[in-house]
Image (cartoon, rainbow, N blue to C red):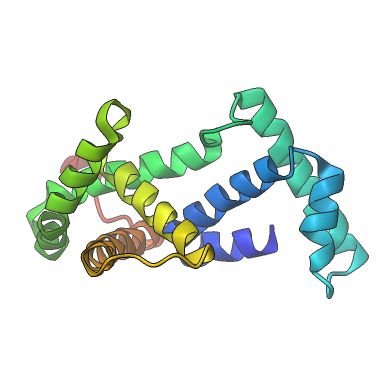
Length: 185
């Protein structure tokens, strides 16, 4: 909760990947608040009792949302899908506006990797930005497991990371100073 709110303010891409990880951690603990308390919350040693209570309530609300939304085994919470949708919409706006030619150049550099990833996904293929996030999350999981990746995969992930980092920066800039006016859309 504390980490999530900090990431939400600083980097929307890191926030989204973190929230996907939280969803998986909740699943790994069987959506059981007692297990989450024992395996996750209690590991934060410098929390005040109030912070600990807030964290428990946050996990409890996420568990409740996951149950209500039917994502107890797989999938993502609507709040996370909404952010992904906002990023996808911004991505499309950036691609359609000549003022953002550097973003467009990054995108076209990454596009072959996106096409390859979507081909591997087959019928489960997602939109382009979701594909990038799925790839980044997969890479994060491999790193956490201490698994090696090929040089080609590392190169592709570096390019995808640059695109998503740039999109994330535009997202935050757009929150404070809109990049597009209604006449642009």
